[in-house]
Length: 410
Length: 131
Image 1: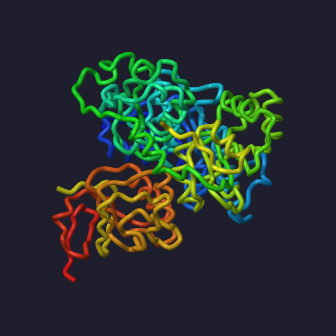
Image 2: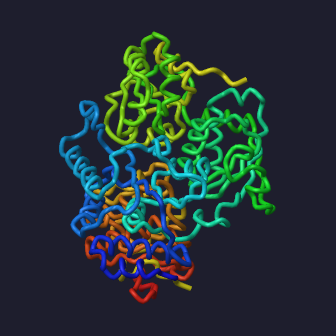
């Protein structure tokens, strides 16, 4: 592997012990991926600020003590705490203190206190062809697929090591060849699916299960598919599978045509049918029964989604706890009357974290409904709850009624 | 053919996981037990084992949880993989640096190690030990 003179200087400790430790990890990952060299990155997004135990804190503390700081603009993923609404946290004070310390250490390295899993909803975001090092599976798939920026799946520690050195292994999705589609997904669906927002989480879940860590090229999505819909698709695929990138032919920037997405190679073809998507909704959760709570906004809701939620609420009141996960930056960007409408509806707005990774929801009796296939995938294991998956409209209607109220697909 | 991904030296009983395991949500970092109820080895302990997995799975937070099990002294003694996995490598590499452990990660063919107890050496040797 070819290291530049700056890379070698970092490795040898010329920039301090913290940078040397970070560079050792970057070089180790480059070896594992057979990268010929390292490349410059223009931004990083760090997943390690969510508290999993003291090892994460030990790592960041070693970097801080070693005099390191991030060398590129670096955003932070969700943490374990909602700093804007601390009263929502129901966990132990000891864990809260440890989680806060981990957050503070990241800020001490120069990371921005964004606390969001949807950094692509911030004002500044990477553009087509930019090399970046992002953690958080849904952010990775969105950056690669929708923005056309280039990142591999960086896990905890690796994302921060890249942020500190400003370098990443030149391999996989950082390269032209590594971004070619590996499987074609043809939609063979009733035309009404294109008006159903559940198309996107259900299709994403199916893709994750069927395509593993491959790169699907999806043929047949509507040209007007929105960023929020692509966000839901990618988040679902990166939860049920290891999807790091997809192409939506005619929509995403590296797939004007199927030939561009596949680089004109012959690759396997899959077909997804109405029955496939209906089966996924049935397998993910229940379709009837008492509703205990609703949680929407995984990944964090955009301003457009908050506006739509406020309109759907329409002056009604939820009869169950209704949680809305979003970021502090999105909250600050919507008009005050949107937030007032959500409050009038009885919604609890959660920022900086998410309801499936930290104790915010109380004892729930009954099913929890969500519009997120990702939340539905992780919450049963993390929280021990039963889930139902519905559109945002179905979530609001069910919350008002107090029972799971799904439209049958027919 | 053996490839050393992370240097180390370890002996332990072989635990073969035919399905990949996500440490995040799949292993209790306090006890080292497998808690993923959908995994065939649920209830087994990874502590002190030479863990074979075809590759890692799932969340990128698994690197933290692997490091946390090693920090708590309940992690695997070593890993054998069928293909490179940067999440496993990252978690082990960082833990070895922070805690002075020498947990190895290697790629080798499982059929070469049919015994129950194996030794992985820093030079990349993988020896089956008699019981």
